[in-house]
Length: 239
Ligand SMILES: [Zn+2]
Image (cartoon, rainbow, N blue to C red; front, side):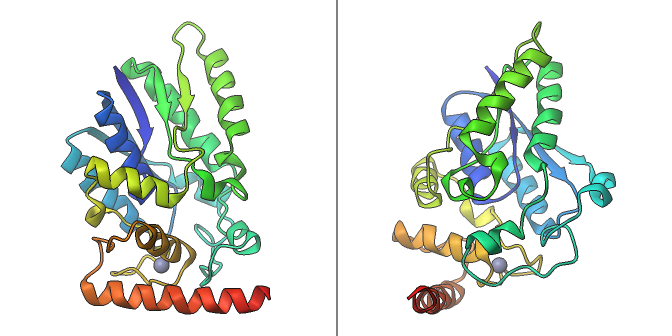
């Protein structure tokens, strides 16, 4: 059983990789370089694929950067330092990203004889990123099937109903090396602990009552302090 998957180097896709290995798949992981600021994530993807001993390709599509650069992840806008609200999250949209990446992955799946393409869309992405929704997964699955009808490929997002904390819970059971993963959008040497993904990451580990293994003890204490401070700020704002 072969499966192609999108591996970004973050928590969700790294957990997906271990989930597929646990199910007995031979995994072909693709990491796309599309001009994202956080190239640390790409290095992480490399390390995780190596640790998991799977076939891994870096796919450089950064030449399309100018076509889709927009928002805080690939454009010039600053990365928002706050919890994800609709407004903040909208600024981190890369237009049509998953449609582009999954189309390429589906073509690769046909080539290597894999019947399934996986990506780690999940509930926390649901409200804002339209290409992480169940409806999108279903529609793309149909489109990819029709486009490759003699060599059918399915598109799957098994975490679509799971929160980030659920994903971390699963990953801890599967032994995902979270110390190798990267989430921060800032692209510095160490996680900033303040951007939306850093806060989300801290929350996911806090809910599971586990220290984030990427962080030192001091960094973890700092992350929890910042998380609680931002939480309080956020609550008083919504009062
Ligand atoms: Zn950060």
